[in-house]
Amino acid sequence: MVTIRDVAKEAGVAISTVSNVLNNVDVVSEATRNKVLEAVEKLKYVPNMNAKFLKSNKKNTVGLFLSSIQGDFYRTLTQAIHMQCKQKNYLLNIYISNENTSEEIYSMIISSGVEGAIVFNERLHDDYIKRIAMTNMPLVFIAKEYTGNNMSSIVINNYEGATTAMEYLIRQGHRRIGYIHGVQNVDNEARYQAYIDVLRKYNLPLDESIILKGYFEYALAYSEMRVLILNNVKLPDAFFCANDEMAWGCISALNEAGIKVPDQISVMGYDDITLAQYYTPPLTTIHSPVTELGNASAIELFRLMESEDNSEGTMTSLSPSLVVRDSCKVLI
Image 1 (cartoon, rainbow, N blue to C red):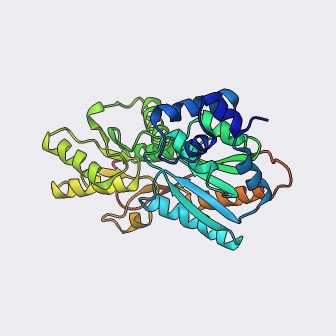
Image 2 (tube, rainbow, N blue to C red; image 1 turned 180 degrees about the vertical axis):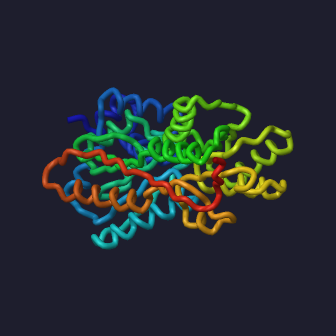
């Protein structure tokens, strides 16, 4: 079995230096850090004391590793997980790592001391996931399809949800449909791919001039829409927005320009956040089962943690649903 002493010898550094690197203590030069990580990778070292601690000393603590906590989506998800933990008498520790590297996220997870972890962070690359798997820490990934011993995934079928949105708009008579992107993550990619595929299915035009970038934020979507209007770009029949906050930014900019929603243009959102029903007009959107996502993630993690032996993980896909309100108009 490879030990921390072996890593130190391979890298030509002290054992304490290896410990500092693995625990992400910022007292090591970049060159030394790289030497240590190269040794860790070469020897396939796993911090066994930490793994042993995790397996034999239950701390009744779950770790939730997120890239952000901003917005209704994350609040709803976190609350659902928290309530499940509370019912099982587990503490919930939340770790935010929106700008951290994959290596830093890896170090954060294995040094956290939690009994099990729910991970929703795309920056954690597959090679680091494999290294975490060697510790046998129970893990549940959100929006990332990765399963194995003590590892499960819970995803929302965003492609299905976006297909439902687009086909609803087309049934309402819309033929020229714009799109507002979120950030470039798996959720947005699935929603945008469905947008493209449905346009192709119905032989409708894909017009780059009405494809905007709002990065899942109200202010940026508002700004993009203002620029579009000021440049006198011909507006589409409808905009499909990759989340509700961007849809509201879109509607706000249109309203300020005297363009009425839905009388002159329809706007479709995605997620069905709490405020969507209180917008003016109330937003037609796709309901993402975020509470169900949080509940399922926690319940699956408890199953893995309570298993006597290494339990084979599962992959669960949740389906979104259409919520019809008043922001889309029938054209036919």
